[in-house]
Image 1 (cartoon, rainbow, N blue to C red):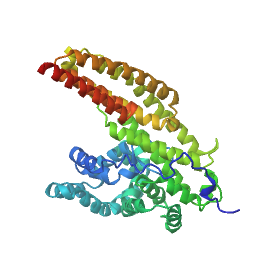
Image 2: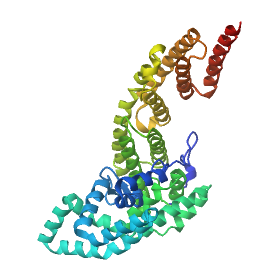
Image 3: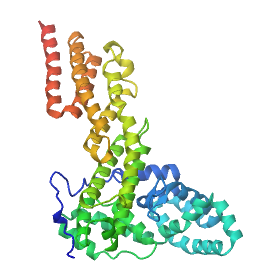
Image 4: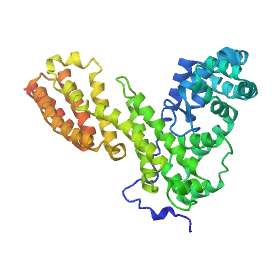
Length: 431
């Protein structure tokens, strides 16, 4: 059977190269600083292992580490596992705070041997295992011990996976990615899945890479990809989808990072579309099942948030101008902006996130609402005195929201109308 060529897949209307956006890395330096400031040495550990870490339990085994397990593991490490080494590391970090990541990376090498000895002892003795399980904080953490140890032991390989993924940003053609797939010598053993997770996490163009993978597969089903030896790459893409859903859920609160959430939505859409468009995933496919579960999780969060878009905008723009000073000093204006930005991001990804109905309905309702409320705001501006800052601010907010909903050209026209109103009032004052 001939190799499955990626050219057989229709890509019209698709962006086969993906977005090039990595929401989990989009604000990497700031997130790293925040983590270190909040968690200290543990924050640096989080930062270094970020590509292979997630908030929920991995749907595909041995592909990523659950964050809460890593937290409990580190508490055990400080108290029981290697207290002197961790204490030394903390002292070094205080003396050289800017080098904390390098210090933790170097400490990983010294941790491997004592951790291997302690785990081996626990495996050989039931009482030792019971005591260690209690100290770690539960059986689930004990079960994750080997995977955490693998991440620490093969950290240099995980870091190399990140550097390779970042290097691919300069690739432009499918042939380059195809050659890369052929050239990569995947690690053997337990480090393999973690390596692929770290690689895909940092990969800017998942679409191009998957096309390169399929050039070396005898078919386009999950089974044929696995038989060809490239299953870990598909697993890693599913894991990245789960990391993105974790981000969407985490940032769904009132004080969310809307930019991070929108980027996560965009990348989820790109990767999900890659897997569905380039692969033939049947009902029995593990990848297909995982995507369905993750899509349902994301849709549940987004439907709730999208139902708040129209009320949030209404709360701001229907407020009487004379009371606007109270409203504009609260977080409600930010809520309105965030809601509309989120709606726009969900609209671009609505098919992958199964929110077509709620997005289309909300998009239409928002359009009608903004047209009416912007017109009212302009009427209020005309009635107000020249230079009334509250009346102008209300119009400005409406115009900015319209720029997201209707586009920049429409917003520019409305902005000219606003300026003309002030100009006529000024001329009338001079007369």
